[in-house]
Image (cartoon, rainbow, N blue to C red):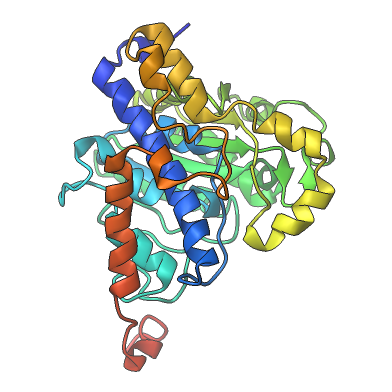
Length: 356
């Protein structure tokens, strides 16, 4: 049953959400294939099977809201404000060309080839720069919206964090600060069951990481991370709570990491994670869940749900024919831009290192 926020979504919203799920999945598998073809170097951090968290949480934001993604959230950089047009140059999100150039380490990237993954951001697009210090961006996010409030703004910030990061001191210091000052910070915990190679029962003594919120007197919500409608529902509840001046919330999204921590960990992950656990964790593919809900809501027919069967397939099995053509075309524009882009001139080596 859809909640009050999800009930307001139209049939067009449903189709847009599904296409965004497809796009986030295609971004992931396309990069894996490009690397196997030898056209891409560097480490990849897969968001496969976790796409509903990004799509559902971003969909209801206002353009001026801020986001603070982490390494497993790479699609968030271009999905932000996606409802205002995939190719809209005024959209408050990065272009697919910028994001792909970042992955390929080319000069068209926001980071000017200083990294090949998520260490980027944009003050103009209201995206807080990602770092490797998980939970370390929460205090920065709190500061951003604190300044916004002092300036009379109404922006909310979403911060994304793995469940393992909630054990760090900076996580608690930042959430406590946000709670004391009633700052509009929504902390999303992507509980994908593993903090690198550490299972959740070795990370926390309780079943639900949302209970971290109880010690700070703030809401701790739990969402089905495989159900884009449920993620949208819980995040919108937290966003409205924050925007009304009531303060921060924690939203735990329960999901499962399809591959290793990064592609460098895939072989090792196959040994430390039981095969049946992986199969069970991947059994509720977000695309398949979305299709079933659309059929139940009457916004998709059973025959239409059989089209573009990307769900339930790994990167090795899926093909371009399993995705809507509009998705393949859009991402291909970014990939080809990045492949054909140049690297920055060597003279840029000291740029941003020293202040002249």
